[in-house]
Each structure stands twice: as structure tokens, then as C-alpha cells.
Length: 117
Image (tube, rainbow, N blue to C red; front, side):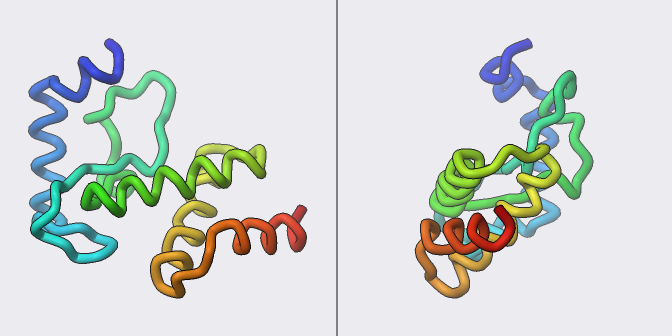
């Protein structure tokens, strides 16, 4: 079953409502309750349906924070060859640094690359 079919499947609709309910129907990054909400998978596992993930790999984000997360992830993937789990951890750290300190992503990635290669 392809991703687009999974998104419209009743099992995913139920699962995403469970996660949004857990997160009080607000973005767990910025706290927005007024913007469109998405349930974000930190990373994907081959062979799993999108509703089969444990709670800790799913988070409610508004559409803006969700887009920011994916931009950061793409930039990290350009610089590093790492596993999904490592990508999740690095993405999370960079995401929150960018959000909290309003630092530019390029500068953070340059620093990480220079320091850790």
C-alpha cells in the first residue's frame, strides 16, 4: 500500500487523532492551536504502515513547524550519511536550536561538519 493510500486509510485517521489528543490538539513545538495540525513521523521504518509506529516516534506539529522540520532534515541529509535513528536525533537537536536561538541552519550545519566531520 503506497503512502498516499495509507494517509486516507481509517486506521491512520484514528491513529493521528489519538496522537493529536495526546498532544492536546496543539503544536508541540510552537504551541499553536489555530494552525492546521499534522502528525509527524520522526523517521520511517521499511515495512511498517504509518499507523503502526509507537507513540514516541509521532508528534503533533503545526503545518509551519512541520515544514521547518522537513527542511532541516533535508539539509542534514545533504551533509551526512547516517541512519534514520541518528538522523532523527540530529534533526531534533538542530530543529530546537534553530527554533530557540533563531540561528541560521547553514551555520549550525557548518559547525557540526567542521567539528565532527
